[in-house]
Image (cartoon, rainbow, N blue to C red; front, side, top):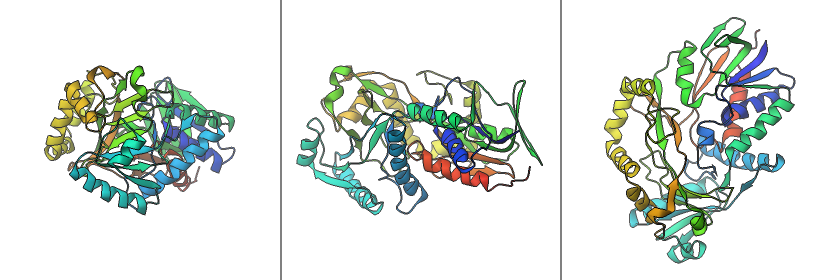
Length: 399
């Protein structure tokens, strides 16, 4: 009998298990992950950015968690010999509308207590000679890291503390009774006093598998990246972001140096035809039928069809994709963009088409399902894990 079972070997699940072990020394904790390795999905397919927190509403939980998470991630990396860097980020305005939006973003950032510097066109050029714009915000504390390495370090600490991590476990049954929760995967079975589910792209399905009634669904959005050819990887030294459209949930196509020295560009945001299919033409019939039958999907399409068409065109045309980058980095050429792995974001959507941008928890007496952990969940994972761990400990301790 385990004290706690955590389903999900991404960074949120591992951060939760790590904190549970810290809060309850000696607790019998097991982490179940269906893939053969950790951080196989959202955690291992993102830009690797440690966000400073300039975008989020002042005083909000997301803003607080991002600030705390950025500092906690850097501290964790230092203490566990995980390489990271803090090159900073430039948020670049390329026209008058973006300049106006940049002003609002500056106010927001300062209210969040983020150290920023406003640059005019000449100042921007002095920071990054190959970047063009009317102005920019320099976010000094934005960093980069490989979150897969962070997860490996977390897993090592979980094991040292006595926890168990089991890979290749595709959970197909969850049942709760008055004394605990039974989790099955084929012929294998685990018994735990409490269950915490941090399943990301499959979170809605595991909630339903547990017998919970849900009114949302995860719709996959595919983010496509390119790798800038190595000979041109030094075209910038910092992260370069466009000023985001406040009406859209994505931050736009950006240039991101990686901790290994590479430079990536992306992502865009197009509807994914498979929740876990990273190939360009990946299609999973079950996933497609699932969202086609969901009213929320059609409501999202109705509300966002113009931006959806634009993103799809960028996906189909490398030249259009490049044009988005050339707004702020005109020296990039089509031949500079090489194939790179895609990512898939689990976007939770309500039946009326509302995109869920906050946390969504569902719980029973012994189960806690994390149905949505909003971006930037990787940056904020350590304090998110602390929050989830405290919530799970607050559930009934009857055994």
